[in-house]
Length: 155
Image (cartoon, rainbow, N blue to C red; front, side, top):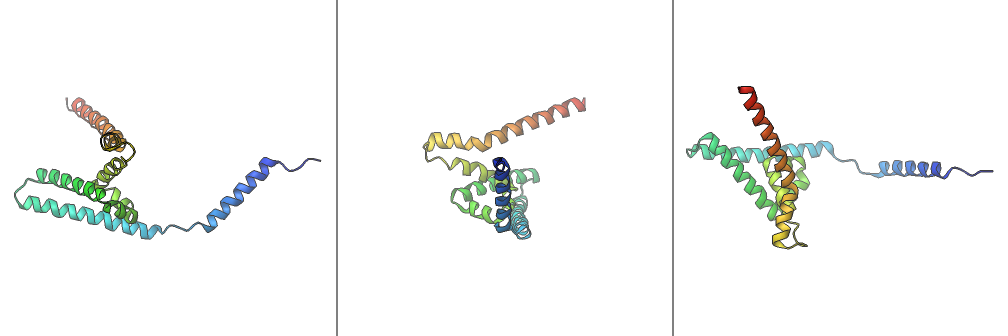
């Protein structure tokens, strides 16, 4: 007389375990998280628009004001990450803090701050490109392709 198939029993145990986990796992507050992301992302953009309007009112061209506003927002994102504020904001705001340009600055600076094992020079130098490297390469490749398409279609 043969006993039950051990693989079948293992599969049943895994299914029962997963079912139990799904029952006790807390449901994420999707609506609340979406509202927070919208509010925080919107406030970051409103702040950037205030900076942009201020620079234009002081006589800067719209193009120069836009570039300066981007640089200021990147600096603020990096600075707030360095002092630990942006990560706390990200815990509550989620994508609302990641999508604006300040989120890119946060991603680069946060990876660079994990330097303790390697030291300041090699740690920061290596870590800063762990996120920025692939992003920059992708940006260069896409911008080159767009430039080539523009050159060949305008002739």
